[in-house]
Image (cartoon, rainbow, N blue to C red; front, side, top):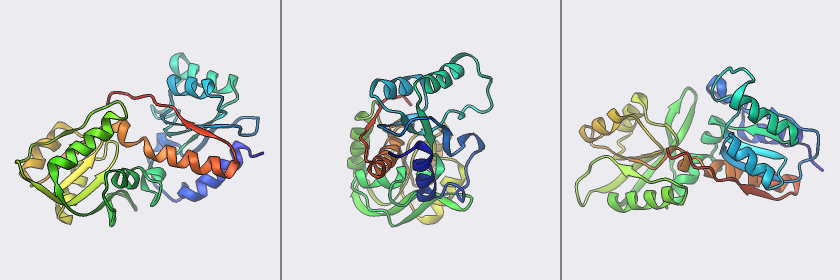
Length: 257
């Protein structure tokens, strides 16, 4: 029998949580401990009342998420925040969160797995954040329109839909980059141009990014923040479940974004 603490230590080492930079509210690692051995693992993108209830309904006592309990910053234990904490404690559910360490991982990172799911082969890093790359990039020769359709198919399978910045009929994608979630900012756009990319696949981005993309020779496919971050937590939960010898399941809770 394996404890949540033991599994968390293994996951921390796998994802290099201590060495990986991140935003303070991410608080990567074991955020809530429990008292019983891990019997079943649930994976979800976000820690919310919906996903905690999904873990309860599925009989899981370890919930693995991308966005943890403290993503909203320092909060009082009142209202919805208290309800989440109370549900975890009353049902003896441990909570493990991995944000940028999971995005950046070379085999189970969100960006790596999304690229692979779209039939793209990663050949390097993209979307640098301090000392790490949150995304991947590579070469291809395929119809941009077909790539948008593939992204939309993926997004719809996870409760969303994909949209793309404008492009001309017959355009082809030769150099691409993938960065999941809210991966588009001014630095990412500059990096894409410097790398010679022509297509970026991401989760969501600011309005100005679609305006700038057209003028920079880029197409950006926005496939949904939630949808593009569903793969990493599933891979991590499967890895942890294998080490503990327990089953796991995914709790779907699309946000519409």
